[in-house]
Length: 263
Length: 322
Ligand SMILES: Cc1ncc(C[n+]2csc(CCOP(=O)(O)OP(=O)(O)O)c2C)c(N)n1
Ligand SMILES: [Mg+2]
Image (cartoon, rainbow over all chains, first blue to last red; front, top):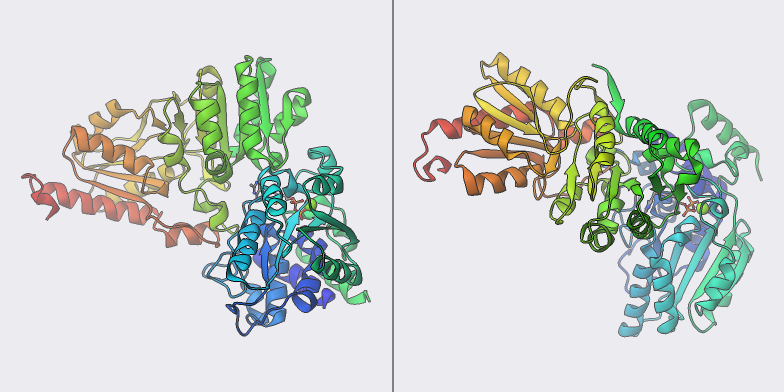
């Protein structure tokens, strides 16, 4: 499935002529784990009260999100190639109300975790046992609002909130630690009262374990997923150039061939 | 028609300023390669500060630098610069009158594929309402270059917006640019088309279309929205007695509103506003979107004909409105 999703990401962004493949590829195992194992959801009934909620705080990786939604059955896989096209439900950044499965409009970084907090509070108010998952970027952590949300989540002891941080070490300008250093990231979240679980973000078993563990823990959980930006395609890996641009025709061929050859 | 990206010329202007003046400092929030402040960063690494994805902090930091005598340029995309940071700009830059130039790129729907989240259609409105703020919207890359230099010499808070795409070059190196001064790009007597940003190029195209139908339109480049050059506006209106505004922005709060405010208190001439009609944008190619949202020469020409129709029914009170 991960290989399939990666193929979609390459194809969709190529067809669109733009988009953010790098951060989509680093999030692939995380998204597959959530949508195909961890989350309680029903693509036939996207408004089901008891569904787990998912917020893509780093909205620019819409390609991997849409691919996961389509492969789960929220809408036809063929629609993926309309990404970023006029009239498409697949907006460049997720748009609430346009596409089934999208729970919030995102794209302006740093806002998703607050929304996830609100949903986690609503679950408590309604006495429902759904969980809220939020995928964040590491560069995104530079935005102060995350830390305001972090405070709120531990203050209100949001046991049903799980944030997953795609720690691919790159942002738009280059390395996070050279752009605006984040470390020690795990300690910071611990100091904010969160359970911090560190996993290899390309190992589905580790991601599943962490999600399971967080279920029994008190307070909000932050899963820091160690990843490689552009994972799965040699020339895209750790290559900042592919943060915000898609493959050329030749690169697309090469990428698809490489993905085909992988286990 | 040759085209060029405003942000590229902005980048060049910053380097020129950096060379001439030690007090120039530039900040960016993880978008330097997009906003082209990267040119300044390479030339003057000691006077460039990357703040990370933390726009609000960038504005506060800019205010602090300005309070200590620096002339500060702070750049990011227009949605984040004006929306995310509105209160920081208001409290720490506009109110104390700090010498900070907030310069944004990726304004309007010509941003294209990124969609509504990244298309600023409210930035002029947000900045124009703020006391002490000067608001500039250059027509092309050449003007963006000159405006950058002019802002450095203009003491106090400024906001300038630029596009992402390449825009037609419609002004020349020799043409004068002055903050607060509109330029008449083409004289005419039947209707004033007052435009800003890349809509000035489309207004000139509209004037050509109108000419074929025997209509002689005047095209005014309103490159500064605030302070609004009401003198040039009044002169033009005295000749044409009707006006169409054109902007790649919501019709609420931007150039159309500024002209409407002026008219409401001073003149009784009919006005039509071309702009985005109170809606968010969406994904698509810049061309497709400009067409879908009516930001075309054809639509400006059509509006011009309609507004001319309104003035010929001699004004009796508000009868011409039907
Ligand atoms: C508030 C805000 N500022 C800037 C941007 C532009 N932008 C889009 S992606 C990106 C870099 C994101 O880096 P990271 O969070 O590490 O994501 P990833 O590496 O997973 O792609 C930036 C600066 C934005 N979308 N929102
Ligand atoms: Mg990253």
